[in-house]
Length: 458
Image (cartoon, rainbow, N blue to C red; front, side, top):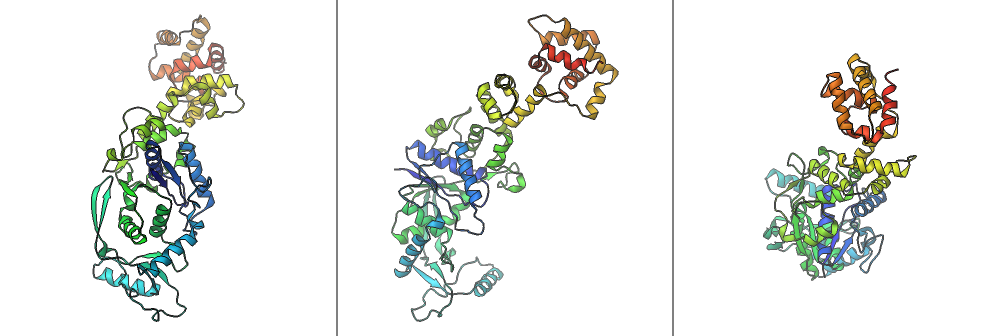
């Protein structure tokens, strides 16, 4: 049975790279009717917070990525927080020590720092020199703190990666690495292997930044006598400059995107195209899952494109009815039918809920032009245009044809382009941007439009 996992550290908000990892694991499990597991890797007690963990739950649920097992839901392989599995790691580490596959190291921090400096001066990679590897039972310093190091065998480690194909690593470049700290806390590589093996994880889909961890993890699986999962390392998500996405590219966290008003289906569609091509159009999660395949994942990095996200945002907005959007926009004190009608009329001009709220503003409140806008409205040529609009509106009979009305004002005033449209827009909405003027007039209605224009002609 396919069992995938998403194992974030609760040290901050999810970003597109994390979210894509979660999405790909969810899609793969769903495609194969398997299980998607959420595991919280919170052994970094200084940086992990329950607030960040709660944010992870919120982000994943917002995207629709529901897990079958996890810290909040439980399951047959729990607990699902690493901080609650310390005794499991200590037991497994102790077994490796007893079997001679790991050992206690008593080297001080000062000695290790000196060793690293000497290796760096010689242009050598940083690796432990094995000083404590062959210590006998009577050689251990009494009462000295110690870590547990994995005894790395000197050989080639082979990996058949689902994305990269066959890869080879020389374990001699790794050195004996720490699997348990002197504080009794498991190191990442060891805890991940113990959890993946005991939770029966069949596939690990993650970013290329974890590729260097994989030979260490494969060696631990082997030492524990357990079968390793199938690994698939996907290229990192890039920023617009093709460098790995980071905070210097701006805040693209899931929380920030949600607060900007992007709909979750827009975000999932943008994330799905980061290293995979499921085809054109806005696709639902089940459609994406039906098409997902590890074999079709790209071997090169993909940039997180805000323009593409906005494109999917617009498609997602247009796919929703006015009533649903009105509920999502959540403007208080407005008649529900009015809000639904506005949502339906304006949604084609918006990529996010925030943009939709902004487009609604002139139709829900009195215009409040700024100083520069008011000055432009009161110019002689502007008042001439506003008066002509007022007169044509008064004379307009049903059915109301606002495109023809604008043409009549154009003929009557001799103005065109910005000089024709901007005075009316500013007088009616107080804003320079927005939907096209016929739409403004249509949404305000004849009588409200006349009232707003007359205000500037007194």
